[in-house]
Image 1 (tube, chains in turn brown, cyan):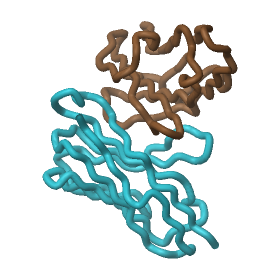
Image 2 (cartoon, each protein chain N blue to C red):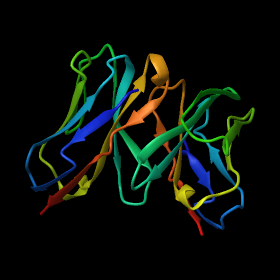
Image 3 (cartoon, helix red, strand yellow):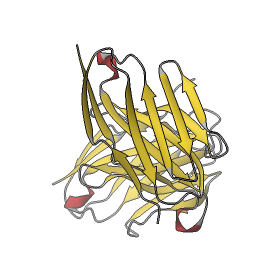
Length: 111
Length: 115
């Protein structure tokens, strides 16, 4: 089976812009979670989607949003980018929330 | 709020040594605990998952134990190799309160195995 894929792998944006990241889970997986990883804060949970419904949400401002499509693919959107949003954004999929399989991540740089 | 701590923050050992990485968590209401490794600039690779009802899991040279009541887990790596060099992360999935369903990560242990 193909693993979790994320696009794009690298992204450079300027402050105030918005960005959309995409995640394709492992075939058959219905749960997709998003995480932000920074050197200072480590890995932090953003949100989890299961069968197109947001099942859980971390402590991030409303500028961070996501959605899941009927084919389980998920997108994450960040509006009004700030310098502090520079991070590695990781997506993980699982069958029902058990073992998490991670993608390679999208490296976002905000200038 | 669940907090996960990993000790030590960094570890450097010669090839062939057996080693133990530690993980502790503050809220024992968890569904499971998972150990990952992360290579520089890459995503996470799942190593072992222990359900809350289990005491340990083994995969090859890796053995992970879980003591839910005391909020501790250890990852034992036997006969370490240079290819084991990576950052090791533990994460717990909460089963109650504000941590329900969320995966909380520790800050990781940076392992270096030198030839």
